[in-house]
Image 1 (tube, one colour):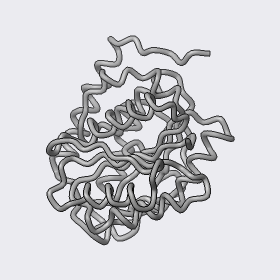
Image 2 (tube, one colour):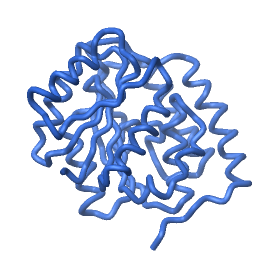
Image 3 (cartoon, helix red, strand yellow):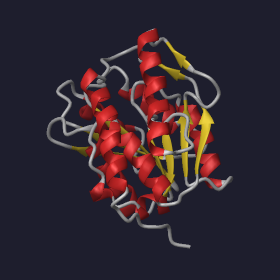
Length: 247
């Protein structure tokens, strides 16, 4: 069994799913891959299951859930699967090639060989590295990350990023059932909780490319959750005792 598991939540990713699976499976590190599918009506799960049988037996897996339950709950389910199956490095990434699968290697190396507990594939640690996004969305995302950095005190440039690698001990320490957000702000809450638990967080620069195929799941309400949710999360943190990593 591989020591790393890549988690990819999906909903209606029929145009991308086979290509993204082949790209991840083709990496020299030999990661395993778990697809968490929320009842995609377009047949995404059927493609995954055929690839499990035909090409990637014992490396590709799927969790099928009924209906759209939110990004956060999909990842929590994936984290629990990874912990139960003894993986040491657990990755988050999108299905639509906005995250380059080859960059998984950089995230892995930073955690495995350079001592990071959580590595973020960062759009903003070396400028603004976003391709094919409308300028309004770039500015919204960039300043949302700035806002979160100020409110939380984290020394992280891309606080809203969804391309990450965790060491196992981070997910073991974080009380996953206490993570409240299910949407966009889930990514912020996971980073902030790791930060408050005392883990070492590093960023590696990536280029984020807007999807070419399929439909974006982003909406205006997602940003509202991030703006107001971050304030509530920070206020709650003053009254919560965070678990510390074991030495």
